[in-house]
Length: 430
Ligand SMILES: [Mn+2]
Image 1: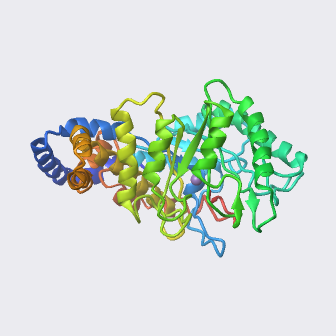
Image 2: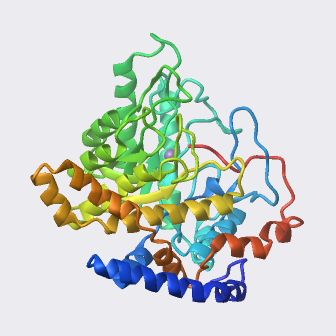
Image 3: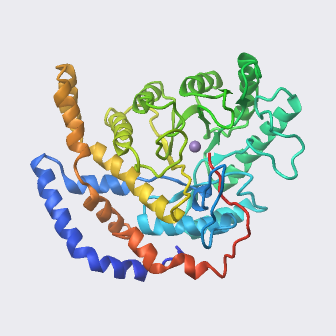
C-alpha cells in the first residue's frame, strides 16, 4: 500500500510514546478487569470498527459568506484519495471513501477503483447531486430536482442518479445516498402532497435501477436551501418514503439534520426496530446543520447514539448493518486533522458504548430504577478509553498520536508546489 506518510516516520514517532501507552493500557486493563471487562476483547472491537471519509471533507469547507482556502488543497478525486490515504494510514479506521458526483467524476472509473486500491482504500456509498446546476446541464434545479413540477427536470435528475449507480457499480460500492434540496421558501409556493408524490415517482425509477445487492439511502434535512418547507424534511417523511419504496430503501441519519433538542438516539432506536436504519453521517451541531467536528460539541449524544447501536448488536437484530460516514465542513482547521480527530471520536463513542453492562441496565429498567440505569450509562461514558484506541491504531500499523505524526511529516508544505491553488472549491456541504 502506497501512502504519502512514510511508515518509518510513524514507527519513529510511536517509539517515543510506546512506554507511556503501555503503562496507561495496563492501568486501564486492571481497572476494567475489576469491572469484569476484558481489555483485549475491547481492543479487538476497536480494531474492527471503521467509519468512511467523504471525498468532499478533505477540501476546506466554507459558509455562504466566505471560504478561506487552505494550503495544498486537493484539486481532484485523485488528490482527495491521497489525503484520505494519509488519514487511514495514521488512524487505521477509515479504509472506505464516499464519493460525490459529479464532483468526483472521471473518464475511467475502473482506473479510479484501482488507484484507490493501491492506496489501501475502497469505495463506500455513492452520493448524487441534484442540488446545484452543472455547467453542461440542460435543465436547472433552481426550483427542485426529483420533485420538480416539470417532468423534464425530474427525468434529468433520475438519469443522474442512475448514472451514479452505474459508476458506483464499477467502483465496487453497494449503496446510493440521495439528498435533495427540493422545497419551498414561501407558504403556498408548493403543494406539499403533490411535491412528495412527484418525489416518490422519481425515486421508484431510481429504485428500479438498483442492482440486487444495493441499497438506497434516503437522507433528510429539516431546512436549507428551502427555508419554509423541505420535501424530505424529517425522519418521519424519510421512513414513510423508504417503506413506500421497498426493503432496499432505508433512512440515513445525519446528526445535524434535525430540529434542535430532538432525541436523535430515540429516532435511531425506532429505525433499528423496523429495519430501516441505513446508517449515519456523523458530525456535531450547536444551532443547526453546522457540520462541526464529530464529538466536539456534544460527545454525550454521540455516545447515546452508539449506546443504541451497540444494544442492537447485543440483541443480534436481523439485518442490522448500518453504514458509518463522517460528513463535516472544516472552515478553521486542517481537514485532514479534523477528519482524523473525528474518526477517533466516533470510534471512542463505539468503544465506550461496549462498556455498558446490558444485563444490568435491563434489570434497572425493569425495576424502574431510573438513577442506577442512567448511572450505568455514565460509568461507561466517563471511562477514558484512549489507551484502547491508541493500541488499536498501533496494532494496525497506525500512529499512537496521529496529529503529532501528521504535523511532523509537514505534509502540506511538501505538497505546496505540486498542488498550487486552482481558485476553485473542491468541497461541499451536504
Ligand atoms: Mn449529510
